[in-house]
Structure formats: C-alpha cells, structure tokens
Image 1: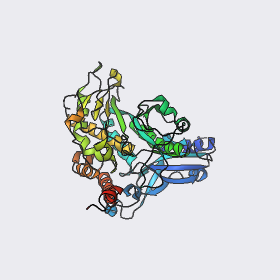
Image 2 (image 1 turned 90 degrees about the vertical axis):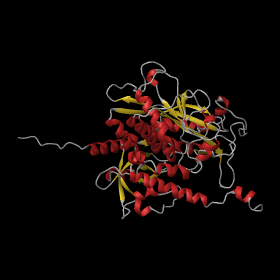
Image 3 (image 1 turned 45 degrees about the vertical axis):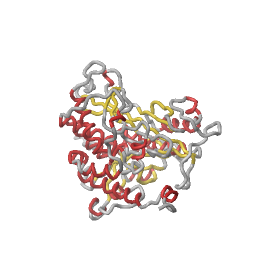
Length: 461
C-alpha cells in the first residue's frame, strides 16, 4: 500500500507554526502587531493571542505611511496612496517576536512587514526601504555591518508645551547643572531608571552594549553591538519604546528630540558602518594593516561626502533637527572626514584592521532608524557604483571649514527631491510620499506663533 504523501510546509506556514508555538509556550494572552511608521513610531493593532493563532497576520491601511507626526495628511495624499485607500497585508517577522516586559498580562510584540495584495513588498514601508538598499549590496557580494550609538535626555514631566524642558532630579534630590561628560556618579543618580531599562532590554534580547553620560544635563548614550542593519534598526526602534516606558514608570520622560533644550547640546545617533564580503566574511574596508584602507572604502567614503547633503532629510527629519546641527557645539557642520577627528561629520576611528569602519555623525536621535540606515548605506553604495574619491583627510578642526549642509528641513526636502540617484535607489514613490509628509509638517510648524515672537515682537514692531 502506497504511503500517503504529507505536503511540505511553505516558509510562511513554518513561520506561522514557530510563532504559534512561541506564544503557546509562554501562555501569551495578547499580541502587539507593530509596524514602524514614517516617523519611526509604532503603529498597528493589539489582538488576542488566540485570534492571532487563527488569523495569521493582519491588515492596516497604507495611509499610515502618508500621515504626518501631527496626524495630518499632505495635500498630495490621494496621489500617494491607491485610489481606494486600500489595506496592506501584514506578515509578522518571527525574528522580531519578543515579550512586552512592562505589560501586566503575558503580552508579546512582533514587528510586521507590509505587502500589497499581490504579495509584493509595499514601497512606502520604511522596513522595506532598508531591505531594498540591502538587496543592492547583496547583488554585488557585500553585506553592511552597523553599530548605532543613540543619545537621549531624561527630563521632568512636561504637560505644558509652552514651558521649557527641565532636567529631572536624581537620587540626591537635585537636578544636574554642571556638565558631567562620562561621569560615573552622574549616571548612578538615575540607577533606578537605568536598572529597569536594562531589565527591559534583557527581557527583549536587545543588544545594548555600553552606557555613558554625555555632556548635557541628564543626557545619556547607549551603544549597540554591531550586526546587520535590519536587526540594528529593529533594536533602536524597540529600545526607544522601552526607554520611554522605563522613564515614565519613575515619573519622568525620556526624549529623543534632537535639540530639546536651548542651552544644552543636541542628541545624535552616530552610525558606525563597514562592509564584509559575503564570500570570505572579511572586512572589505581594510587593506590588511591598521590605518590602510581599500579602494572600496575610499569609494564608499566619497559617496557619503557627495550624497549626505541630499540625504539630510533622513538624518534631520524634523524642524527641530536643524537646531542641533546649526547650534550644536560638537554636531557636524560639513562633510569633511578625518582619522579619529570628532569635529568631522565623517570620522574614521583608529582600530584593528578587522574593525575598519567609518562613523557618520549627521543623524539626530530623532531619526527613523530604518530610513537613516537606508540613507547612509545608499550614499555609500552610490560612491562604490560611481567610483568616487573622497577629499584628503582633515587633521584640524572641521568647524573652521564652514557650514555646507542644509540649514532647515525645507532646504533638505528640496535637495532630496533634486537628487535623482537617491530617489531611484530608495524608490521614487517612497521619496514622493516622504517629502510630501515632511513638507506638510514644515507648513504646520510655520503656522505656530512662538513664545519668542510674543515676547520680543508683540509690542516692539
């Protein structure tokens, strides 16, 4: 008697089985289905675990990727989404499933990818934009490696938007006033919050490496272990949620605003980046000796120098971002590069050959991590493709070279729209949607009458 053939599971069915088993083993009652939006915030649905088991995946309208941070829609909304404003098909990525450690009942969170009805990756989803760039590297036998460094401030609760932000009191009952760069004791002032942060990170398997106190009052920085770009973007996305939650549990805010306080430095997300060969696994930036680099490294660096100004709308995605760049004490002013030179926007750290890399210092902490990584990798890829050469390395202060980046979100949007190579790499439809959203945010900002105008202009003009 012939044996009955058992049909083989498809990859999607295998993933479904893995997720169901994971939920059942941990007795999960609810699942947060997360989608990173244009700003980098989590949108999605919370559904019962039993419903998730029987209805694999879910749906969301594609309009979430054409929505501003204020909840408005750009004037071109009808041209950016399908005429029917239809749903996207969401599919969970099993690599991203984690517990929600602050939830009362056993709750899971899982990042979803977005697809069209016919199964194609949706062009407007930031996670897919990053994947699009990574596919270009894979086609030429290269794999990027990324290590983000993310800064943020702890601040007092602020329920009145007209009231300036203030540093919170630490364990000693007093807020910081003096600069406390790299101070261990200053970090210890916030031990209860940071202990909770580490508990959350451990429960979620976030690869947070080191923690330091930065120069601002109650300004901290976390470094992530280097790995592939998609996992690093996921980790930054999830860390922001976790850090905000840990701070709120102690009655204060954690903010990733690029320039939250007038007299304090801004917050950045420095991006360490290198490339390895998919065949040999070796770092293709290194020529074999410390301080010696390959042609690919020089082309990559040349691409960053040429295209970063056009990509600034991703590194400075908000009107506030340019306060950090224009008025920050250590923020980059131009695209100069140098060895271990922190005044340069592009710093090449001194390290062993296998760790040869370039650190991009343009992005603020307010970026969408998926888009910031996609943009910096796109710039480097264009440099390799066009065989660009960088300028000579700078040993002195790059600040003396002047400011040659966009000075506002409006300028950055215009430069991105004018850059055909970047538009093509990131996707024409995506860039149209992104710039339309940012245009609308800029217009909304211009309508606001500030306290400065009321104070100095009300009775003096």
